[in-house]
Length: 167
Image (cartoon, rainbow, N blue to C red; front, side, top):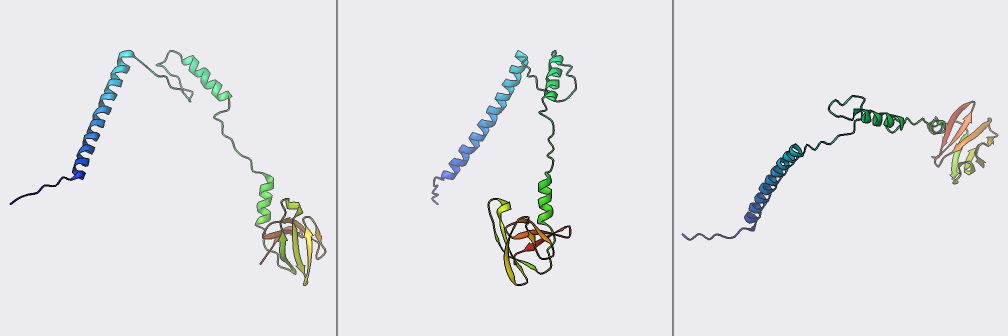
């Protein structure tokens, strides 16, 4: 029988790939051994920056290291910053998550302005619609508009905050 052998480019590629991997491993091993002998022969030591209060007994300049540590403590570079929450943000959360008002007043629409104090709320009281601004009193049951959002209006009634929501 006659056997025909075709050239397979994949077989050649995998062979070249294995040769490349073997050569790179040999290069890395040789490089690291040379670096180890180089550091032993020339006694090249690299001092690292110490971030703790311990003493380094192997180095001759331990006083310089403690000076660096003390100066880093004075610079407040490693100090933790704790952000204090803003009271305004907490108040906004209280206002935004206030319970829904159940009564005769219904929110019909909102005209939002870039400045929140200039936004307009359109409220319907007993079938009549009227516009109100922030901090304006509503004649019905002594209610004050506290804040106008895009989808709700926060009112203050009897010392508590309630929200009117557009449906």
